[in-house]
View: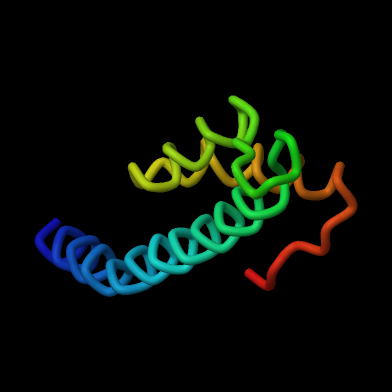
Length: 89
């Protein structure tokens, strides 16, 4: 029993750097999507004072709060619908 418990603890500890790396790359990807969406998916008069729509704003806020699973799909969909090429993940 001790062997299996020790093996479980070691496997969890060994996987932690990969989980942190995935979160970091998700964060960078979410930030890149947010930048694109906030720059190009705006409504307004064309004088540079436009605002992104509510979905983009909420997804951007989700990304900044670390809720990548909530923000990334919305931003990807909005950018694809506008025929933008998504950044590399």
